Image 1 (tube, rainbow, N blue to C red):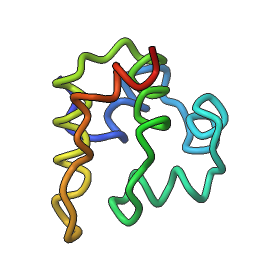
Image 2: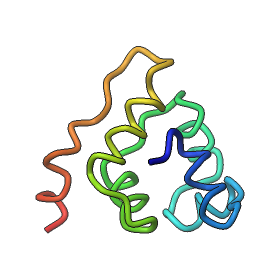
Image 3: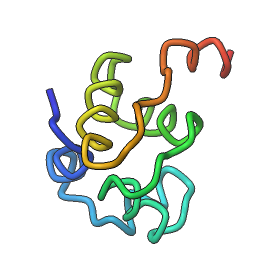
Length: 86
C-alpha cells in the first residue's frame, strides 16, 4: 500500500508531477499543492487517481488521510464517490 501520492508517482514509472497532473487533468501547480497537502483535491480528482492506478477505496482513503495530516482538514468522505460517478 502506498503511503503518499509521491509514492504512487514513483512506483508507477517515476512520473513527474507534471506528467501526473496531465494524466488526471489538472495543472501541475494544483497537483503539487495536493501532493504537499496544501490543497484538498476534488472527489473527481481522487476518482481519476484511483482509476489511473487501480487503487482500492481504502488505498485512496489512506492516501488522503496521510496527505492531509499536516493541514487542518479531514479526508474527503470517499465512500460515496463511486456512487457519484455511476
